[in-house]
Image 1 (spheres, rainbow, N blue to C red):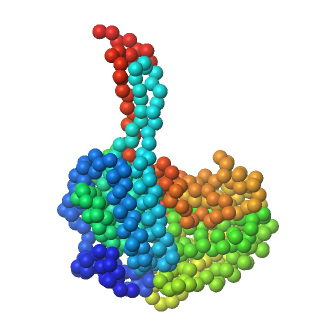
Image 2 (image 1 turned 45 degrees about the horizontal axis):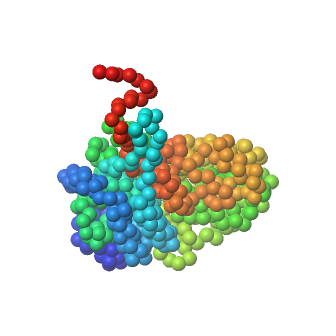
Image 3 (image 1 turned 135 degrees about the horizontal axis):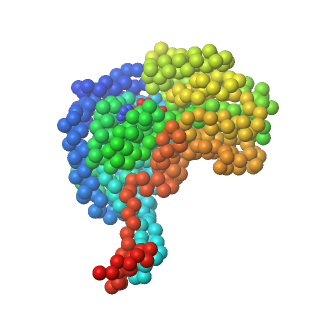
Length: 495
Ligand code: NAD
């Protein structure tokens, strides 16, 4: 695990890793791997001013040419996928195939954004006035502030930045203070792509390192046209009203409390694999991790014991080792949160399997299953750790009501081979989440669809579909190509 060598191959100078005030540790064994500089007020101001200046030049460059920069950046990612994927694992502790998968997701969104750079379509609209036409034009918005969480230290930034850049905006990124190294590496790769591009304005993309106060600098700055913030609902509750108070635009991607329903007709082998990946994978540290499972009472005694057995054999350990499926929790505080939740579940009458602390260095845990009779108390909260609450249900309506009966609304799924059940789950009276899946767990979304959730998840949409519209300003344009001046709605104003 030679971080300095890895960082240097990714373009980050050794000097950037020593002497700073932010001590960076790896969750793999808790050891210190770097000390990086925290941006002070003057440096934050310089980067925001630089982003504003860069925006003014970048917005005038044709969108397909802007796409060329994102294409070049995607090439850098392809060339450095192994190193960056490894660094993701060292920075946040997810297993290597997921670290590499995160970089693949960056490559995919770059490809998507390059195509999009020729498809920023508006509508043409029939005018009620003779000799007039109307159209909708999508204009660049302004500098975009991106605040990201520790658990997707690079992919979330790329979902935002790749789209923001082709849409004609500049970006300032405030990564999680727990994972600054990946951000520094991505910035270095971006700068290489910018050099190859040739005339990208200085300051088009920058990184500011620090904790929540550093994020607050973006939140409160009127030059930041859009604040895209990913993290806990607590964070969104603070960020949302502050950006709204200055009439800025906000895109929130917050906590989830995702559920699955296993019906009597489900393919139980498939459901078992899907549940293990979604609930225990990434050590339960995905916003889309499966946290609540409703199992029909007729199959409960068949399915749940098999699930518990599978949990016992999940390989937990060093995420860089081949064969490991569950890496560490991010830190000690996360372990405390997990055990606080398990204590509360126990007090509610929950029967707990797993949850033990494993190993000496790093916060490794055996993923936990908690069987409960009632959907209440701690089950309604998001605990960012591998705890799966399992409850029986009798009717699908009851299961859907429980699935929707939480404050969060990110992702959901049903395992069934009954088309009526599947369609009911996907209907207006079904799941109330931003993401609803059939025979797939709630996690591991593809970039082609819009990603995000409802209620306390914040309502934002990122990545595919028409999520790009959040990064642009819609303008309705009306042109009079006649010599008359007819007014709308037949109004007369003759002078
Ligand atoms: P967090 O809320 O502690 O921190 C997220 C980011 O927000 C960090 O960069 C942090 O420095 C910054 N921040 C915190 N308070 C702030 C404030 N008042 N103003 C400005 N910035 C502030 O979250 P975390 O522990 O890093 O990540 C885990 C959480 O993120 C979970 O709740 C998870 O569900 C959520 N998450 C959501 C998504 C999604 O797409 N919906 C994706 C990943 C993670």
